[in-house]
Image (cartoon, helix red, strand yellow):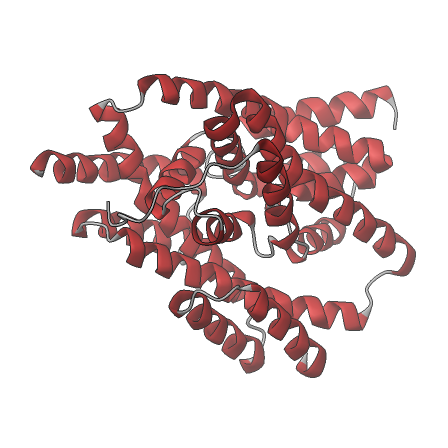
Length: 186
Length: 174
């Protein structure tokens, strides 16, 4: 919609694998904000609208939404092979890292220096996630009704801690109604 | 890891995954019930500590189930728990992806996709808020979060810069 930029490059299967591997390993604070950064801004394989639509579907389906989105993105570019390569890479790296961390914790317990560094990284990662939400909103430029639905989701889940299934399934009809009115008006 | 524990992991996490609408972390209370209350595999404090460890590490948040599996059955337990938690819904997502490709361009599908966008973005914001509430233990991390938000929002530079800065600030002040 808003982007009439040059045609978007299509990744090779190896590109897809390596890129999702990198997304997994830098994914502090959760995958979604990083996947958007790499897929939309760095690689330009998807637009903000594409990515947000894929992630939205991933949230309505059961299962980890970043995983559902990775399967759909992989399938879109490389069919079954892509749908396996993208999530395998996204999980593989962090899983090895986590196994290492678990062994380290079992052997040494908490190390104050590591804890302090991780606390700083976590605070920065929280800002990264918040900044991504703001940036996506700005790029997608939703009509007022959809902006309202987004704010409801933000407040319900982020402030009142309403369980996510209620937020997703409760707000989906309003989002769809808003989108229907916006698309019909054109 | 005994055969009994293997099947408890497979069935327990497999069942949880199928109701995890909204993401893996949405079912954290159910995981707590399975791991702490039903099977008594670990204490409350262990559970909270594993969760904090998985949150601090990079990667999909759902990988916390790998740590629960690790606690019960080492590497085999880790792989069993992760596969049980991800495989059933992955097959579903793949089937849906195929259906979506076949129906691409239908008006009602476009309306649905577009209608879910604000929820996706709103929930990214919500997870940022929840992370920020957890990390803001004083003014230093709170300022760090605010600066990082502005940096990522207003510039196109790599967010790895703010993670690096966060690590330095953490080392110096936290």
